[in-house]
Length: 137
Image 1 (cartoon, rainbow, N blue to C red):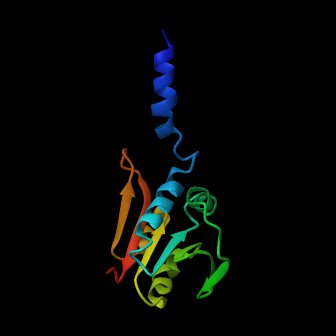
Image 2: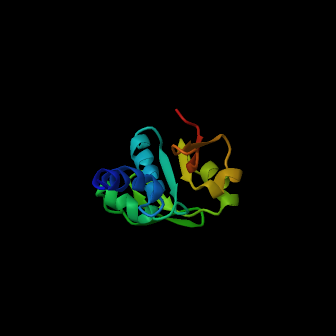
Image 3: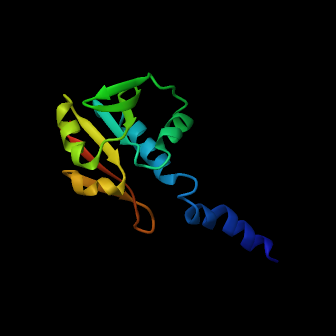
């Protein structure tokens, strides 16, 4: 009698309850970066999103082209997608230093440092990630 309730809880409800554990935020950020890859010259994905540096190669099956610097900060490069950390106060400076269009995908902690920001929210209204653009075509 309990089997249908267990199956429902295991396959459907536990995914939402344990989303942080299986890095839902990192997966969503990686999916957005891949989706927008052809629309921007630079896509910066913040390492403040938990486990994104591990999620990117897992979900894309891509190997890093190595480490590059943008200003004083180091990033892992995957084509036009850059994974790395920028202190919240320097995000705008880094985005402005890049020629062309830029998409920044970061954690909710970055919200106060971003201009023209938006947030992706989950079904419960919790912020998954915030993003900002510069010179979007």
